[in-house]
Length: 198
Image (cartoon, rainbow, N blue to C red; front, side, top):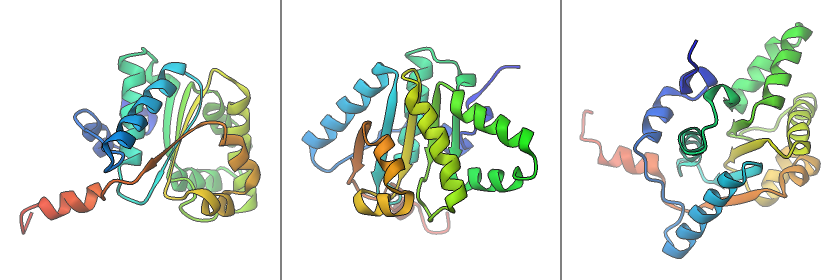
């Protein structure tokens, strides 16, 4: 069976948009250029954490999918060695698997062991301590393996990120590359351009 982007959890709309998208990270051309250089350098290093943060609608999730396509097309990482998962979806899967230890361990091993993992919308709401422990286990294990790449998207930054996710998790990913999106809301802009009745 051939693995495709949709098989590894990438939403269809994000996958289609990523094929032709051009992301702007900042209104400041110099800062925008620096963001592109830092992301490209991180991609070519093939290891560590990449944190994409900014207000909703700035293109963080889309950028993570663009990174996955780059890793597949340019650096030849197979799709089956990548996973994309929204944290809210992961929480629901975790809840449903609580009574099935085999299923829970399998899910943990997959997220721990894939070469590239995207955790989308981290911190959208405060997690339970038990779920936070589960996330920390995955992130800590991945951080201990220098061959793993983890992309985290979040609307939070600084103190808000630490308050929601806790200092130990923030400390674990803090050694990675952080990109702040301070551009305009892409979704709002797209909606404004749509004709009435569309």
